Length: 171
Image (tube, rainbow, N blue to C red):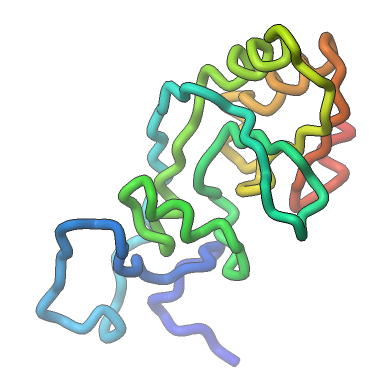
């Protein structure tokens, strides 16, 4: 089966969807499904000085108690990704914005260390990037996951991670 000429290679979404949290909406006169779409969008990085990194997971069907996500959004763009809708909370779409507008938390490792050094801290497993891939291409430049794992190496809690290519972690 041939792909249409306007197909974005490597992108799970082909358009931006409407954000239900946005107060304003942009609509176009032309049909976005007809004709050729714009060129593949470049990845934009938005730096968010986060207040905390570790979040309690209260879902009874997940096998983790705490999660840490140094990135929001994911360049891999897997069409089956369940984390897309979370991007709408930040004012972006769950479509192409999720894949091309990435929110990075440059203070992630400092927040993780502060969390683990606080008085009364009880060692619990922390799942890294349960919401997006912690080793997406942007990690090569920013190294946020690496810095967090270095904190875990010094202050060892049990930790796990979710990644497309498990062999990457061994490097």
